View 1 (cartoon, rainbow, N blue to C red):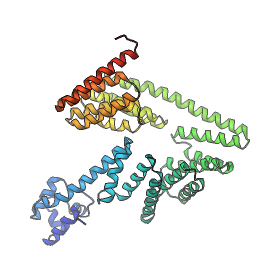
View 2: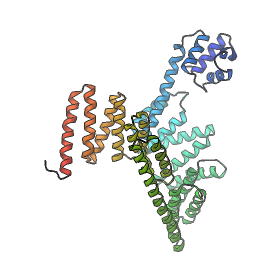
View 3: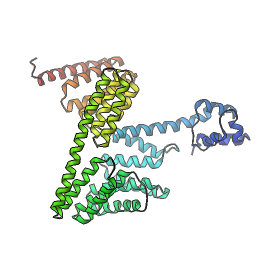
View 4: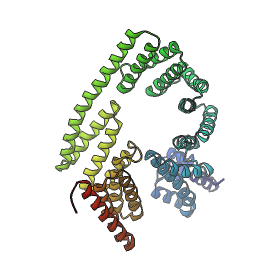
Length: 430
């Protein structure tokens, strides 16, 4: 196994008879050297160069393995970004490679958990189950209760999807027992685990058990801003009371659910107006004010469970920032927007098109072309011919800039075809 950067520095320091204080003199504190040697901190390039000089060693000796490790960190971040954009198949390839070639700078349990999530989202349920169980074993060995709760909940969901209700109960009950013993977890996760128990008991016709868990989940969320989840629980409570023949209570909880959902609609309308104002501010050049308004609107939408609207505002902000030539910020908002839009979604295609424009502006022709091809595929599938014309125009320019005139001409031909279809669709005679 290759030595880490910290191990290399420590070995050389000891070999040369230096203390941490000797090595740190004139550079940093001895405690910083201690952190670097234990791989808890990474030195800047200038500091590493100074350390190498003190140790009378070429800096390349330290950089070789460090660059390899940084490459693995980079690969992991790319895999996470692919997961955020729901490109799970591509993420799987990277995560499998990281698992087979581990790095001390990338948590092996995080890699395994993310790989299980990818398998789950690509329909490979057996692989997902095996991987989650492996992660659970590691979490138990490390006494990592937080990961245990996450994995137990996922295993319960997997079993429920496969209609294996007794096993789903086993996993969720185990998580529930951990919570009752005082294991802290994020509020929504706790409430979700307890609500899931209510759901599976309702499915089995054990309505008294279902009722108990629904009420407990509701009690946990009372006073929180998880309004949509509370409304969902009220709806589940109404179903349960109806099955138990308690129609008055069923009606009461149905009315409570209705009131929450109506309230959410009213709140949404208020945020909609504020968001439109923010967009107008951005389009008239008040970029910083627009960012402030729209960022707050995103938080407000998230509070009431309107995730699609959060994605839409990320997309709107990206468009405004592109117009102001703030391409790095625009790219960040594009990446965020993709987390909220499903595959084959028109909004997703718009984001791909903007991402292509950003990559093209940064002279990343291959990435730009790939983004535009993804946009084109969606526009074709949903027959958005007007948008398809714009996408082919940008893609053609990218190929032309690359000197790939054959592809550029094909884009021009397809753009003309899309333009004709757009005119037919609008009932304009050609």
